[in-house]
Length: 124
Image 1 (cartoon, rainbow, N blue to C red):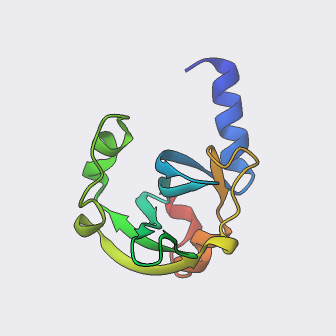
Image 2 (tube, helix red, strand yellow):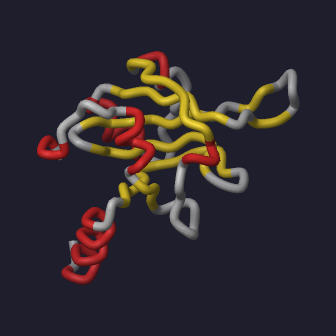
């Protein structure tokens, strides 16, 4: 990793932002994405609703096994069934997920502290 890139990553991580490791189905923002946060692999999933012919207004949130990190971060890997391999945590309203201005790089960690209120910060 270059020195500049390392400084950018540290800056992002030190300012309450969490890097998006991978994403799929971009429509205004990633409809499915994964972050690593406090030693957890967290998946946000907002699948297309065929009956409504639209996306929903909430993400289903799952904690996935860390063993999937390498597989899911590859651009050509399939994510079909990934949520079924994880533990369902709850829902997050899309309006409550604060994406960076590109909507591809990072999210504010506030939504994660809301979803995991008892997880200590020291375990990052």
